[in-house]
Image 1: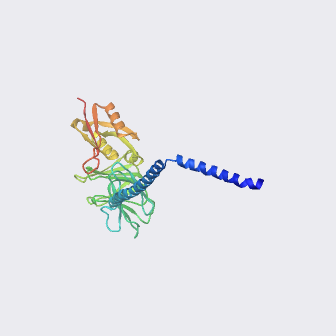
Image 2 (image 1 turned 90 degrees about the vertical axis):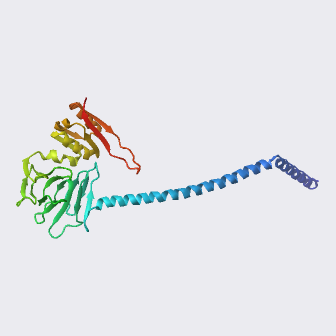
Image 3 (image 1 turned 180 degrees about the vertical axis):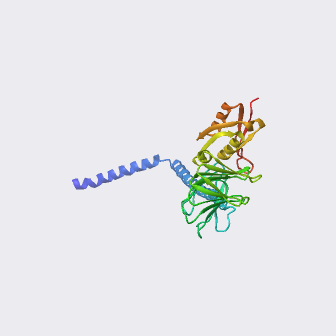
Amino acid sequence: MRETNSKPAGDILRIIELTDTLTLQQTIDLDHRWQDLHRKIIYTRQRQRFLHFLRNAAAMLLLPVLIASFLYVRLLQSEIHQAAPAGQISVTAAGGQISKIILPDLSEVWLNAGSMLTYPPHFSGGKRTVRLSGEAYFAVKADAHNRFDVLLTDDSLAVSACGTEFSISAYSDDSTLKVTLAQGQIEVGSPSRQKPVVLRQGQQLVCSKIDRTVTCTDINPYVETAWREGKLVFRRTRMAEIVKRLSRHFNADIKLRDKDLYDYEYSATFTGESLREILSLLEKSAPIRCEIVEPKQGLDFAYSKRTVIIQMKR
């Protein structure tokens, strides 16, 4: 009796389950579900297209960036090697910057802003010869058998040493050439003199570009060489010289509007101060007014130098 009734009971349960499933299926909104699926398909396609667009755009943008980077590197290389004879290395310190160079014999050179040093990749033949345009501080490695010679690019002076420290200031727009000896002994020769001048520690040679006269005086070398440490030292320095050194140090165009300003003298030491801070201090110590004109971008996208106008207070 139990076996006879078990099959109908199972069929009934099967019918109930199918009825529930059918009821559940009837509650499903097929149109709504299809619209959701359609939206997901469209979203997926659009997302894939967008990612593909981004990859293409990145590739297109990367090309000019790579080209610009290549041109920039070539520009730097041209600055480093400009005016260098075959087989020579030429290094230039940019405006407002100080560059340090280690020469093949391990001598050290600090180049001041706007200066250029040319030297061979290897010293040979008992010669250590370099050429300078601008200003540099030399710490020459001692070698009694191989002299170290610095020639100016205009062949106006030649400085010779075996191992010592000295500075040379020979900017093309200066009216004088200066050689300052910090340590040891050097010889300074020029076409206008038959015998070289021997300088000893603490002495400075000044050569006039106008009449080629040469004078030697005892000075404090620190005043002339502190620039390699990023310092500006002035000792009863005339305004014209201060403006020139500030212009090089900060890569700015500083102009004096009144002739009376040229006679002002200052004594000060600046270490890490900004140009604006230095000008503010100068204004406090003299009846002058300083106006700073910030750089502007030109049509070639390059920025001009900062301009500073110094004039008497009215």
